[in-house]
Amino acid sequence: MLATASKPHGGALVERILPAARARKLLERDIPRVEPPLEVSLDAEKICIGAYSPLTGFQGAGAVASILRRMELPGGLPWSIPIVFPWREDYPEAGEVLLTHGGAPFAIFHVKERFRLDPGRVAQAVYGTRDPQHPNVADLLSYGNRYAAGPVELLRRLPAAYGDTELSPRETRREFQKRGWETVVGYQTRNPPHRAHEYLQRCALELVDGLLVHPVVGKLKEGDWPARAIVRGYQRMMDALYPRERVLLSTLSIAMRYAGPKAAVHLAIVRKNYGCTHFIVGRDIAGVGRYYGPYDAHRIFEGLDLGIIPLRFREAFHCRGCGTTATDRTCGHPPEQRVEFSGTQIRAWLRSGQPVPPEAMRPEVVEVLREEMASPGP
Image (cartoon, rainbow, N blue to C red; front, side, top):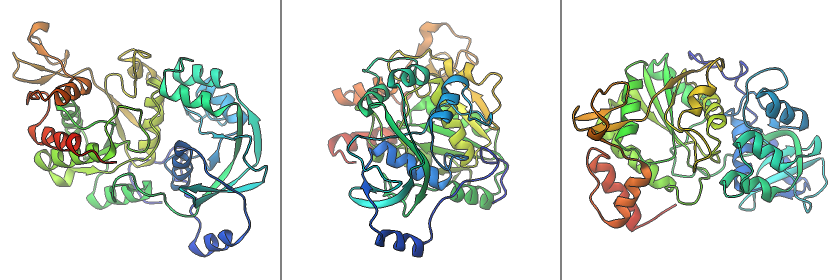
């Protein structure tokens, strides 16, 4: 285990990657194959590389019940979102199956348990709603109620969502150690950077040795920016702004859980596994629609010891009186001096061809997004 200031969740980094020789032998056997939904494939890979430590596989009925009732694994370790494998009726009733992605095997799933879940109950406990308009609730309802659990082993990594920008937990930890970072703040995002994002990152970077910008690019909801736009926007912003030795950009290919406070806990645990000691919690982190209050995610961390320090920030805005980005904790000017902006507003400006004010987003990033809208990619 590489020495960093942050221990993995549960104390040890789980890595379940098969040696190449054993993987080849498995592929020679006549093992039934299953092609799960993209979000499930991404979870399988993240289990095996340690992003979901201490999990070694998909969770069973007992673990799910514990998470839904107490937000804990059966041993008492905090955990907020079940990692489960929906089992369709047309899947083979086998003790082990090869998981495929695009038809190519990438992992072996050792099925030890089959059980049923009430999708409405899971949705209410995790997402706070049973509304099928919520993107993750819609997925849950589409799965049905049959599930399987058991260990997973990785044959090969899945293709990265964007180039070679994705590092494993072992690789980020090695990079932190190489740079001499003892304290690292993780920044969760699923959007290109605007000025409020910069403000939170720069404030946090004053407190720690390094910043991990860790955008989710695996599976996002309809209407979110594609991976290429997010990564290119951050590359351009970071080149223009930060000391290179103090920041690291690495993508995270998971399905985004728009679960507000429960997602904030999940995302913090994941960043702890990647080696972060601190985690930025902004306004309405991992929210969608009007399902969560703007600071519900701040409150859920109260009294919760995850082994990673949450840095809570209020909503940032541009203040004409201050002449810079601020929050209601740092600005004493009246509200009419504030220019509030959001990713939604910026996207509306871009779509309509209107100029994006520089106090809302850096011109370098705006240029990238205009290019992406003119020539959209994956």
